Length: 559
Image 1 (cartoon, rainbow, N blue to C red):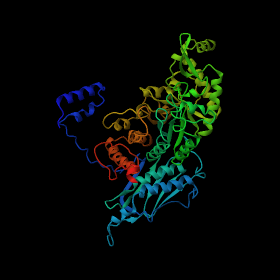
Image 2: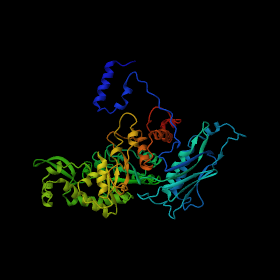
Image 3: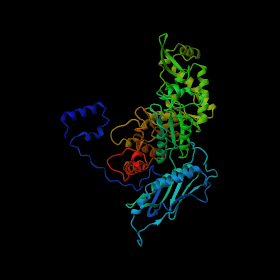
C-alpha cells in the first residue's frame, strides 16, 4: 500500500526535528525511491582485517584438509607443547578454519587425474624467537605484537618474538583461508610482515548503566581478538550501579548493585575475564571513576558528600567527600585490593564530569576550602582529591589513566600519566596534552553508542588519530585510542550488533598504517570480515544490502 502524502509529510517533519541526522540518506524515505544495489567490489587483499603492514600474495594456491592439516610448534621455537596460551590458540584457530561439518567436504567431486588439483598445505609451524616466550605472563603496553607469515607448500611458517605476535599472526592466517564452491579450503602462496601502528587499541564496555552477563563480556573478548584489539577498558562501576563485589568492602555491591546476587561480578568472575582476555592477548584495565559518578558507592558510610538546602541537609548526596581523612583511608584500602586483583600496570581513575553544586552547598566543605586557601575555586578542591588518589595508586606500583578534565584542571600529574581525550575539539586537546609531554589516548570520535542512519562506519574509519597541530615528537606520544560503548541504551540484547562491525573500523585505524584509508577497498574487505564474524557466532550488523554465505544462527537454531 502506498502511504498517504500526510504520512510522508510526518516523516519529513520527524527527520527535521531529529537535527537532520539522516539527510544523506533522505532518498530512502521517498516512496518512489528504489535503492541501488551496492557494486560488487573486490580487494586484492581478500578479507584481511585489519590490513597488515605488508602483504604479497601469488596466484599459486594450496588445499588444506581438516584430516591432515596441523598447527604446531616448530622445532626451533622457544615455546613448546605446554605453553597453554598457544596450545589453546592452535585448537581455537583450527576450529575457526574448519568449524563446519566435515560432511560438507564430501560434496567436493573426485579429481583423480585432474591436473588442476592444488598442492596440499600440511602444517603451519609457529616459531617464537625470544628466550622468554611470555607464555605465563600478561600482555602489557610494550608487548611485541609483530609477526611474519610465509605460506608455501607443504609447510607454512609464522614467526614472532613472543606469544603476543603469534596470536595476531594466527588470526591473520585464518583470514587467508577461503573456500571454493565445493567447500574446499584453500590458501594462496603469501608473504606477510606485520606489526601494529599503535600500542593501545581498546574497547570500553560500561557494566554499570546496564549489567552485562559474564558470557557477553567473554564473547566480546573473542570478537576483539578477531579485530586485533588488545585492551578491554572495563568501566565496571558508575552512578547507576556498583556490580564489582569487593572483598574488602562487600557492602559496596550489596547496596550498590542492581541486585546483590544476580547482578554482580564476583572475584571468580573478574579473574575469569582477566584470564580469558590474557589467552587472547588482551589487557584488562578497570576504571573506578571518582570523585564524581559515584552515586552507587552508598554502601560505604560517610564517603559521599551530603548536599544542603541552605542550612538543612537535603537528604541527597554528591561526589565523594574530599575533606575527610577517612575518605583517603578507604581509597587506600580499595585501590590496594584493585591493584592485587587486576594485574595490568594501569588503572583508569576517571576524574570527569564532577558537579560542584553539592560541594558548594556543604558548610564543612566550605570551611575546608577556606582552611586550604582554595578560595571559591572548586577545581582546586577536585585537584586536591585527585592528587591524593594518584599518590595512593602510585604507592601501589600502578600507573594511571585519567579523563582529560584532570589535565585541564591543572592537577599535578606524574610524567607517565596517560590522558584520555573524550570531548569535542579533541585535536586541540591532544595538541595541548602532548605539548605537556603526556601520552594520550583518543576516544572523542569513537563513541559507538551514538548511532545514525546509514553507513556511519565510514566516518569512524576516516578519523586520523594524529591529525592535530604538533611536532613529530608530540605525535609519537599518541598511544592509540578506544572505541567506547556507553550503556545508557545498550545491554546484552543489542551490544554485539551495535559494536560490530563499527568497532572494526576503529581497529583498522589503530592497527594499520595511516596510508590505509581507501574506503572502497575497506568496504570490500569489511563486508567479508563482517560475514566471517557472523560465521564465528558474532551477530554483527550488516554494512548495507547483501548476504553472507553463512548467515547468523543463534544458539536455539544451532541446537
